[in-house]
Image (cartoon, rainbow, N blue to C red):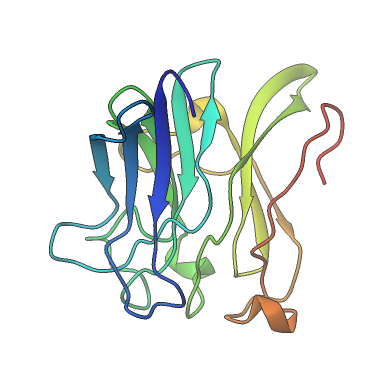
Length: 186
């Protein structure tokens, strides 16, 4: 909950059936829908928002991660699927996004968890960051100010956490969120 609104990601359970991914903003008092961000176009399926959105109160934006791109590799016509997306909390209008490059996509390359806000020391300066792991086994870390509407805000660093694959329950990829204690990123 943030500024009188509740934010909910839309996904299906086990892709049965696969639905249109959305981030929905509800009025916390009435439950009425205030705004909807469609990850994929109306009439399409995929782009699921599995995890909770992350609110950056310092600038009034929300980060969320998506999965379930329909197509392998993920087509350029679905830029917000298998991606990290930043929107304004007030109206869910797009700030920016980053989609996994084709060279790093595997079959079923979903972001299945919640982005984590943290701070890193870059070139001697404390830098606001956001990071999230993917089922390809990689944790991606971004400067929070790097997202833009053309999708070119690349990660500052990547960390290989696991062997990529479509079965995190079997030891492949990652659907686990990170944790930040104010000093260490876990």
